[in-house]
Image (cartoon, rainbow, N blue to C red):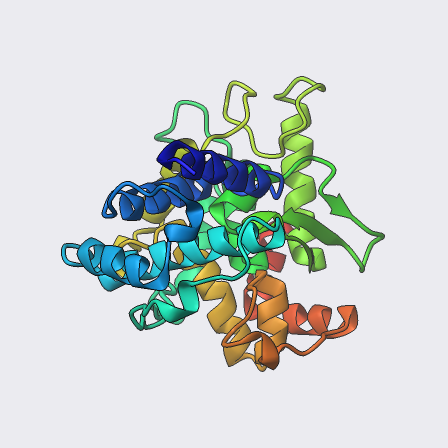
Amino acid sequence: MQQETVSALVEEFLAARAVRKPSVHTLQAYRRDLALVLAQMPVVNDIADLSPRLLRSAFARFATTRAPASVYRAWSSWNAFFTFLVTEGVVAGNPMPAVDKPRVALPSPKPLRGEDTPEQLLNAVAVPDQRQRDPWPERDLVVIALALCAGLRLSELLGLRTGSFVGRPGERRVEVAGKGGRPRTVPIEPELDAVVEAYLESRRKRVARGEKALLVDRHGAPLRRGGLQYLVSSAYRRAGINDRVPRGARLHALRHTFATRLAEDGANASEIMRLLGHASLTTSQNYIEVTAAQQRAAVRANRTNRALGGLTRP
């Protein structure tokens, strides 16, 4: 096989991954990691020439100027690539277990600092900001509340549709397209449900019926990544809590706050894993099936929901 054939196999791998509906950034990372390590090798005449010895040498050169986390991610990309090739019958085995990878410490949670910071933030965004030309507190509140009380990621918020909320009163839930395209449902308590309904009512007065995206800008167009990040940053500014937001966390600090409060209020590891859509907390062996009733009880124990209750009463 010529080098171009290896490149063609990379394209097949990426096409197969695309079926899972990962983010554009994930596919770009796969492509970049595979290409950068491949560039450290001599011309490969056959896929079988990608031996453990050659791969170890390439990874050693690749690692000289890169952080451990970057090397670990590249190793994971190549491991996924070879797993695909084995599944497709292109190669007999995966050589990556013979290639060392760095140990990377799991990042520590970065919740909002301060015991009453979430409540302060919710109270600030629940009222119109008179400095804005066209304030929309219902939308700002639903964004913050879905991150704080349902633990949604930025991409998951952007992927929500008006029909994502299902179930009868008292058993409401939101259907989420999680990381890697993995679907999950998160219980929605009445307080958060009231915030969502108030937003939908305000949205009906502003947005044409054909638009299905849940979160929209002031012109009725689907909210984009930059717009959502700006909305959250503006909310922090209005609440006066910028000094309590961990650096580099921004919207993710809300998700971390959700998880931290769940743990503080008695949720166990498997409940948190299911609610946040993690593949695992430590290893897949620690996975414990959690019933819907247990998940709802864990969310009910989250005291941030109680703070929402006072914002939606007439």
